[in-house]
Length: 342
Image 1 (cartoon, rainbow, N blue to C red):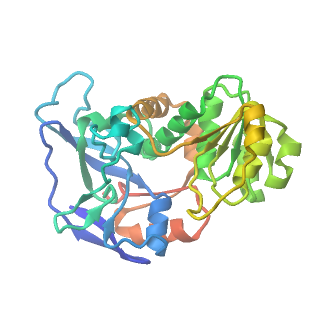
Image 2: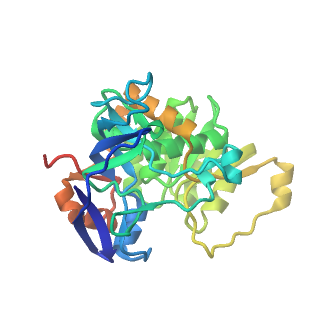
């Protein structure tokens, strides 16, 4: 089978790999679509220099082989099922895993290809093998939507740790792909309103068309949206935390979802946090319960229009280099690879 390997900045090749076989508790999935996220963009641009590497972790496809231990097991994926797959390798043994915080598993993520090349998912390929417990059936949902299982699970995780309740006033700082998913899922889960904050007028216009309750640039956010119960920062830019805190009402919560520059420090007034009972919560990745909810939301079709609007382009695996270039150099929501070249 073929698997895409990024070998250097702006250099990617398709390599031949042995066809994977299902172990007793595994399923083999023929990849229908794999999304390109920030990690792939950084690898392709050379911002994250770790080569060679086989990336791709936002994967959905069709089950083509089922391991003997789970074949026919009620609730387990069957051959022919369309699934979204969780390619994280949680150890279940370290401290965070034992506390139910497996998103923070201390075992290094990833595996290797047959020649020792490091894989971070290796979903830009024809086939992947995964534990059956980490393959979630998405019913009749389009493969493009199923491929968004991982980012939707991350958003479910973000809303869960942020404590979203029906009726909450919500603001999202960053109107890119993850910001839009936050808006969509928050609305579905009963938010009273969801406002979007971004520096791009084009992104704000698109968010408004997609159903944002209000939109504003950071300097106008407090004036436009007023105080909020929950503020999600999906774009970790300088000034974003300060904007988020300024939007928070008494008893409100700021959720830091997006990654910030490693060397960025921000001054926060601890007395204001104390007297106004503000919370600042860090959120990272996702966990199995988030996957179950994400797959259910996708299968229900209730996010269908929103997810369709976030597909910028789709490429065959043979054209993975072109797909990576588009995702890395052009403002996009999601670029998908695989499943359309027969």
